[in-house]
Image (tube, rainbow, N blue to C red; front, side, top):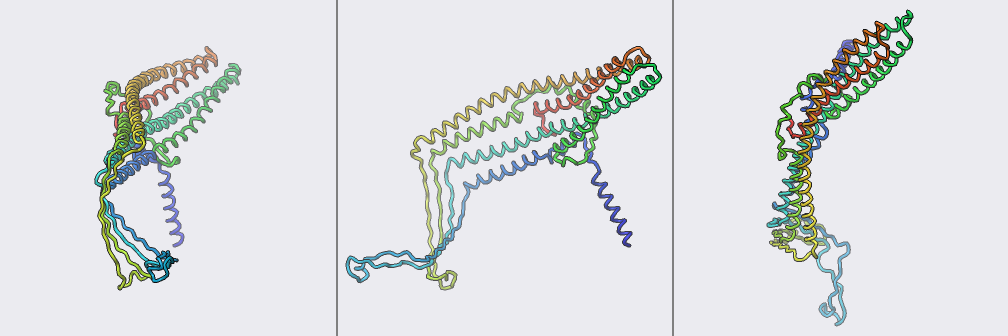
Length: 447
């Protein structure tokens, strides 16, 4: 029986380990959707919206009825003494008699209902709270756009490192085969040692690049996990290929899309910043207006020489009060006007920044279109150049083994091929990254 239980536990434990090691499969679109929900910055942005909603309600409650209760208990450890003229107490004129008035203990309980009737600062505060909420919502939208671009770049970097490793391993196999064949030819005395050494140098450099690419692969996966909001060691499996994403992100129609600056999130944020400065100036002006509030107070008090306030025969005396408070600012030694002038300057600065942002965003959109078009052109050129470099390298291999060309010529052809292969891989990443950059410049929302 114990043996059976042990086998079952072992089986369940192995299944649990296997489940933990199962990689998380993601396409690029799935990675973006996942990051929007789980990325650290997005979580903070969502929490900021919740805080802004609470702040808006906090501001709203200032103008709603307020009820506060107060209980005040006093116990004279040594009662305060007052002096009465001795004549009143039957003593000699000119003398004083010390007398302690009241009881040693007293308690007072009251409830106060207050209501703000008018306050210019409160009305501006309500408008500011709405603007603050809007800013928080726009900040979340901006964060989502930034997250999308970060995930696309991180996802693309992983694919680039994997593609680079495949190319380097293929080159290593070919070069190792060439070296082995050249070594045999040298052993038979049909070629020079320099040809063997030249290939060894090229192979050594290639192997170093391969080891570095494998290290970069691990780092690129960790960077992708961070952009997704995962632990850096979470195992991932990417279902999209670099080639398929390049084809999917090659869209010349995007270059013809009209740029509407009024819909751009950065411009909207700048407009809200200007609005907040306008409200700040309005707030400073409103401080010169009178404020009006009203209150109703009801309470009861009791007095005793001992703590007997909850006895049935304890006598309580209730009272009530209604009042209205009008506060009229009269003179602040020009302090309010100075603050208003400062707020007006901040508003003027916000207008200047808004104009600057408008120009920068228009330039950014044009630059992003140009760079995206260039990335597509570079990709097409890199693909052709790589094909040419492959043909040249193969011809040099044939010539080398036929004794027509030197190892130096072969090495040059190989290095040229490796450079063009790297350019080709990087050009695919650039197409993907530049499209994401253009989508952000045009403020294309996250789907």
